[in-house]
Image (cartoon, rainbow, N blue to C red):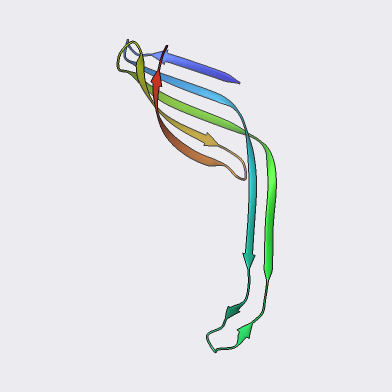
Length: 97
């Protein structure tokens, strides 16, 4: 939805992004027979399945360090909100052509 970059000098810049992220969750959990502590066997089986996808608001911030005219390093933090929201960190090496 939007990006804003602010260069501090020729080598360091910060970048902010706001938008929507599409997510997909696909989880299957199965339990089967187990043995109790008193040596009685339990024959139980349970199945749990979640499948969901959607859109959630997301924000991201980056610190970009330019090493030379063709190479830069980008450290970013992203936060996706909502029920299945996450926080992620990434370190990217950029090469400009």
